[in-house]
Image (tube, rainbow, N blue to C red; front, top):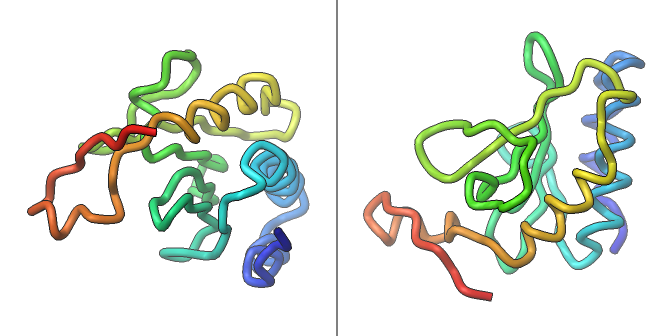
Length: 132
């Protein structure tokens, strides 16, 4: 699948250091989830499987945050809970901080473990686990 042009535009807006982190992340995400559709959603790159947000990243004030929408349910460690649903994150200050082996594991788990964020409104604000 070809990368959405708006993801490259997002990368061009970053500092060289942040761009290096995000370039590594996008490469690993596209390798680990080639069937996922990536786009800029709520101002940052996010990849979806069957309309459900799976993984994305965003430049915060102090770091680049990599977020998995269902990451709290992953068996592998290394992610920190984020928000009130099932999301979990990792933060990076440098491309050398990215553990590509751990990232590959999280990407593999993200294909199998998903909470249904796509239908959160029709489920009255509840996130339900999907079975794949």
